[in-house]
Length: 358
Ligand code: IPM
Ligand code: MN
Figure 1 (cartoon, rainbow, N blue to C red):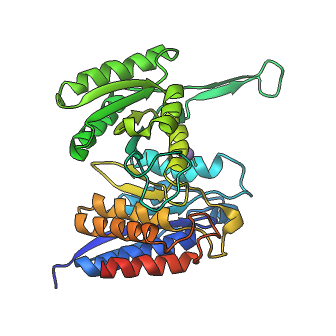
Figure 2: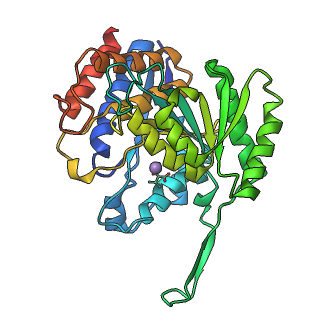
Figure 3: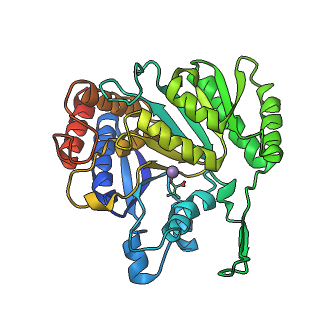
């Protein structure tokens, strides 16, 4: 047993319900590690609204240096109502995404059996696609400024930066993923090329060039407004959706509701050549903090993505099977906080047991 693989895992519990759900997520990861013969070495980071209010510190360059040494990062949630909007988002979450060059935000939209969707006549067959969101540029780049602030002539600019390099690597990731999924073999580029003609043209031209390397894959284009409609009306049309940072942010909240809500929707911030970070896509939900009522399944599903990124495929699939067992066999009444019929820690215990026994 001397050569058992040890992964260096960074934990960022964060704010609100973050610590509770990361505790359960870690429990399930440990169960998977025990069963499949590897282990985790944990390093905890206290980035949070709490730390900011006490010390004024966000994520420092020294912290980033430590994060670079890890194999993966597991994040709960950052967000504190006592801190003005933008500070923690930019200083913690976006700082890590940008500095570690996690240029893909991967958000599977998968309705698990037994989970209720608000979409009429749609089931797990119809709701099964992934959104590949560009994660390091676009409107999130922080370029812009303000002039004559506070006067009637105030001007605010917020640039939407699209680089050939950034767009191309995101598209190539989407095509490769589509090939690997081997499902509908369709990549849908979502944009607003009828109005945002410069960036739209860059995305579309680049997509057509990259598509030549993937002759078996169909390339589709869709406008973001129409996409919102189709995600509700015909989600079965989608396989791999790829889009810029801002559109990806917006459509994945809509997508999350179609897969059963924020209680189950997971995401990964991926640097295929570096350190990736896995998180539930819900926020810190301060009103449920400390009550042991939040649903940890989104965090546990993010854990399955984390295992896959480490190459622990069996462990990842087993965690996913455990989630499906819990949702499809009536163990959990609802994915809404406080309505699960179980506490946060009971759901974690249940999933850890399934991972051991399945
Ligand atoms: C998300 C969140 C973040 C984003 C916020 C908290 C900065 O909404 O991960 O989707 O906009 O990317
Ligand atoms: Mn969002």
